[in-house]
Image (cartoon, rainbow, N blue to C red; front, side, top):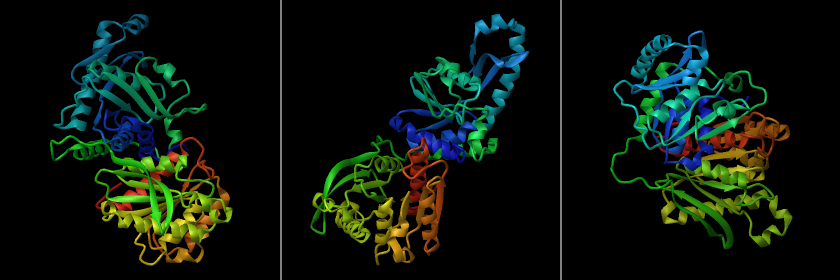
Length: 439
C-alpha cells in the first residue's frame, strides 16, 4: 500500500514540492483531491482553494471530453473532438446546460460567500488524489489556463506510468510520487480511501482560510533566519554541528546519528528539512570528535554518546536565543539508544523523542526511566529491529507509539518510505513540542 490515507499522501507530496514554498497557489480538485491539497498547502505555507470544473463529454461517450467549463463562465472546447465525434452545437448546448447547473451547485456548496482565488499571472499547483484516465485533471488545467494562470503544475500522489503522455501539454510541469507498472484504480494505493464528503471539503477550506489570514500587513519573512555550520563546546570537546533555526521557532530537535554516520547524514538532513518546514529548529552534530572517532569502540559506546547528547543539550540551554525553546531528540539506529539514554537523565526535561530504524534496546535499563513521549518508527521489512523495538516498548512506562512503515527496510531506501518516516516524526514533534498545536 503506497499511502495511509489522503492526508499522508498530501504531506508527502508537499515535501516533494518544498522548493515552491511560499510562491504558489494550491488548487484542490473536489472532492477527493481537497484533503491532499490541504496538506500540500499547509506544508508549502500557501493559500488553498478549490478548482471547480466540469468536463463536457460526448453525449454517447461521456468519458470522451469535448471540453470543460469552470467558474466565471470559462469554457474550453476542443473543436477537433467536436468534428470527429459528430457532435452538433445543439448537443453541446444540452450537455453544457446540465453541467453548468452542477457546477453552480458545487461552487455554492464549497465557496458559500468566499470568492474564487485570482489566478491571473499566478503559478498554480493543481492537486488531485490520483490520476486514472486524466480527463478531469486535463479539464482543471484547461480551466486554470483560461482563468489566467501563468504556470500550471499538476501534482498527484499516484498515476499510471504513461500519465504524462495521456495529458500532453495540459500542464507545464508534472509531479507524481508513485507511477506503478500495474494500475487498476487510484483507491488500490490507499489503505484508507473513504469517500470525501462535501462537508469535509468545506471544513478543510474554512480551516485553510483561517490559517492564511495574517494579522499585520508586514511582509512575511522566509522560513529560516539562521542556517549554518557551527562548532559546539561540549564539556571541552569541540563538536561540529549544523544548526537551522526557523523564525519564531518554539522548539528545537537535536539529532543523534547512527554508527558510521555523522551530521552530514543525507537521511537525517532530509528529516531535518521536513521539521524546518513545520517551524521547528534543528541541530545535527557529530557525536564524537575526529580524534575520538579513530577508536571504533567509541562509536558503539552508548553511555558516551548519551553523555555527548546531554552536554550538547546543556549547551543549547546556555544560549540566550534558545533558552525558551522546548527540546526534542531524534535518534537513528544506535543514536536512538543514546537519545533514550540521555532522555532518561534526571531533570533532562526532554519534550519528545523519535527513533527511526532505531535500537532503543541499547538504552537498557534506562528505558523504564524515560518520561518523554516516544515514537518508534520501524520499517515493515526490518524484522530483527522491529522485534527489538516491540520488546523495548514493553519496558517503557511513558507515552509510546510504534509506527511501522509499509515496504521499508532498515535504511528507508525504498521510494517514499523516508518521506513517511519524516512526516510521522514531524507530526509527533509538532504535537508534543509546539504549544496549542494541532495535526
